[in-house]
Length: 98
Image (tube, rainbow, N blue to C red; front, side, top):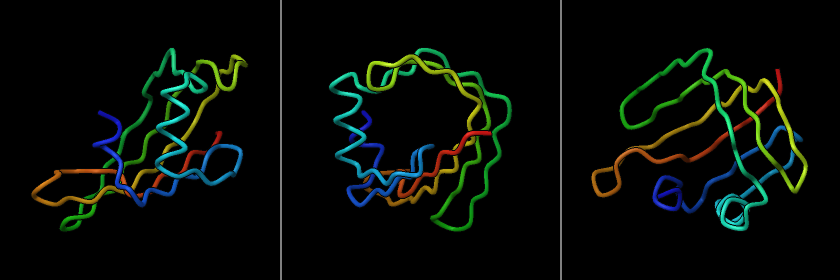
């Protein structure tokens, strides 16, 4: 399902400032190097103009990353694009600690 949700050209910036591709993201989840165990939404805002949307999420996230447990309050900003064959998909993402 994640493969269909992300465009092939995805660029994501992680909370450590590193750039990740769609293939990086898929591999991290598939290989269980990135496991989200809990996600608690505090705020969610949405902006849509035409076939482009941006979501602004703020919340607490915990899980395991590269074998190390983590818990953080994070802000996710995602840019979405819409087309008829695919629906809404993520084009770009940025995650930062708060």
